[in-house]
Amino acid sequence: TGRVIGTIVLWEPDENGRTEIGHIFHTGYRRDGLDTEAMRKMVDVAFSQPSIKKLFGLNAVDWKGQLTPLQDNGFVETGRGDGSSFVKDVDGNPITFTGCTMELSRDAWAEQGKP
Picture 1 (cartoon, rainbow, N blue to C red):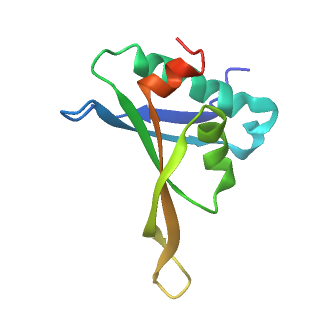
Picture 2: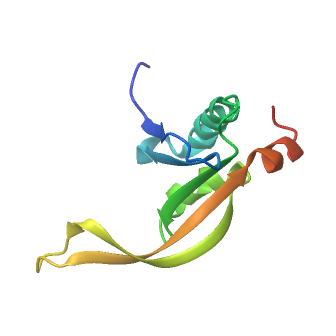
Protein backbone atom coordinates (compact mmCIF):
# COMPACT_ATOMS: atom_id res chain seq x y z
CA THR A 1 0.00 0.00 0.00
CA GLY A 2 3.02 2.29 0.26
CA ARG A 3 2.31 3.01 3.92
CA VAL A 4 5.02 3.09 6.56
CA ILE A 5 4.21 0.34 9.06
CA GLY A 6 7.17 0.83 11.37
CA THR A 7 10.85 1.43 11.77
CA ILE A 8 13.80 -0.85 12.45
CA VAL A 9 17.18 0.67 13.27
CA LEU A 10 20.64 -0.87 13.58
CA TRP A 11 23.50 0.91 15.32
CA GLU A 12 27.17 0.48 14.54
CA PRO A 13 28.65 -2.60 16.24
CA ASP A 14 31.04 -2.21 19.16
CA GLU A 15 34.56 -3.69 19.18
CA ASN A 16 33.07 -7.12 20.09
CA GLY A 17 30.62 -7.12 17.17
CA ARG A 18 27.59 -6.43 19.37
CA THR A 19 24.99 -3.96 18.15
CA GLU A 20 21.57 -2.74 19.19
CA ILE A 21 18.54 -3.29 17.01
CA GLY A 22 15.62 -0.99 17.75
CA HIS A 23 12.13 -1.28 16.36
CA ILE A 24 8.57 -0.03 16.57
CA PHE A 25 5.57 -1.04 14.49
CA HIS A 26 2.20 0.61 14.06
CA THR A 27 -0.29 -1.44 16.08
CA GLY A 28 -2.48 -1.93 13.00
CA TYR A 29 0.31 -3.94 11.34
CA ARG A 30 1.19 -6.33 14.15
CA ARG A 31 -1.27 -8.81 12.74
CA ASP A 32 -0.46 -11.71 10.47
CA GLY A 33 3.22 -11.67 11.47
CA LEU A 34 4.17 -8.63 9.39
CA ASP A 35 6.29 -7.27 12.25
CA THR A 36 8.02 -10.65 12.70
CA GLU A 37 8.71 -10.88 8.97
CA ALA A 38 10.14 -7.35 8.88
CA MET A 39 12.36 -8.15 11.87
CA ARG A 40 13.53 -11.38 10.20
CA LYS A 41 14.58 -9.43 7.10
CA MET A 42 16.49 -6.91 9.23
CA VAL A 43 18.25 -9.69 11.14
CA ASP A 44 19.27 -11.16 7.77
CA VAL A 45 20.67 -7.77 6.76
CA ALA A 46 22.48 -7.39 10.09
CA PHE A 47 24.13 -10.81 9.98
CA SER A 48 25.17 -10.28 6.36
CA GLN A 49 27.60 -7.71 7.82
CA PRO A 50 30.75 -9.61 8.90
CA SER A 51 31.38 -7.14 11.74
CA ILE A 52 28.07 -7.97 13.51
CA LYS A 53 28.24 -11.02 15.81
CA LYS A 54 25.35 -10.36 18.19
CA LEU A 55 22.18 -8.26 18.18
CA PHE A 56 20.40 -6.95 21.25
CA GLY A 57 17.21 -5.07 21.93
CA LEU A 58 16.12 -3.11 25.00
CA ASN A 59 12.39 -3.23 25.65
CA ALA A 60 9.79 -2.89 28.36
CA VAL A 61 8.77 -6.32 29.69
CA ASP A 62 5.08 -5.41 29.60
CA TRP A 63 5.13 -4.29 25.98
CA LYS A 64 4.38 -7.65 24.39
CA GLY A 65 3.97 -6.11 20.94
CA GLN A 66 7.64 -5.13 21.02
CA LEU A 67 8.87 -8.47 22.33
CA THR A 68 6.92 -10.78 20.02
CA PRO A 69 8.89 -10.14 16.79
CA LEU A 70 12.14 -10.56 18.72
CA GLN A 71 11.03 -13.80 20.39
CA ASP A 72 9.60 -15.14 17.12
CA ASN A 73 13.05 -14.67 15.57
CA GLY A 74 14.94 -16.46 18.33
CA PHE A 75 15.99 -13.57 20.60
CA VAL A 76 16.23 -14.64 24.24
CA GLU A 77 16.00 -12.56 27.38
CA THR A 78 19.39 -12.04 29.01
CA GLY A 79 18.61 -9.51 31.73
CA ARG A 80 16.11 -7.21 33.42
CA GLY A 81 16.30 -3.85 35.11
CA ASP A 82 14.35 -0.76 36.06
CA GLY A 83 13.99 1.97 33.48
CA SER A 84 12.23 5.25 32.99
CA SER A 85 10.63 6.77 29.94
CA PHE A 86 11.26 10.17 28.41
CA VAL A 87 7.46 10.50 28.63
CA LYS A 88 6.11 11.93 31.88
CA ASP A 89 2.89 11.15 33.73
CA VAL A 90 0.20 13.75 34.47
CA ASP A 91 2.18 14.92 37.53
CA GLY A 92 5.35 15.48 35.50
CA ASN A 93 7.17 12.40 36.79
CA PRO A 94 9.01 10.03 34.42
CA ILE A 95 7.05 6.87 33.74
CA THR A 96 8.99 3.91 35.15
CA PHE A 97 8.95 0.34 33.89
CA THR A 98 10.80 -2.96 34.05
CA GLY A 99 12.97 -3.40 31.00
CA CYS A 100 14.67 -6.42 29.52
CA THR A 101 17.56 -7.10 27.21
CA MET A 102 16.87 -9.54 24.38
CA GLU A 103 19.83 -11.01 22.46
CA LEU A 104 20.48 -13.09 19.36
CA SER A 105 23.91 -14.28 18.25
CA ARG A 106 24.97 -15.05 14.71
CA ASP A 107 25.53 -18.68 15.78
CA ALA A 108 22.02 -19.01 17.27
CA TRP A 109 20.57 -17.51 14.07
CA ALA A 110 22.50 -20.07 11.99
CA GLU A 111 21.32 -22.91 14.27
CA GLN A 112 17.72 -21.93 13.44
CA GLY A 113 18.53 -22.61 9.81
CA LYS A 114 18.67 -18.95 8.93
CA PRO A 115 21.23 -17.61 6.46
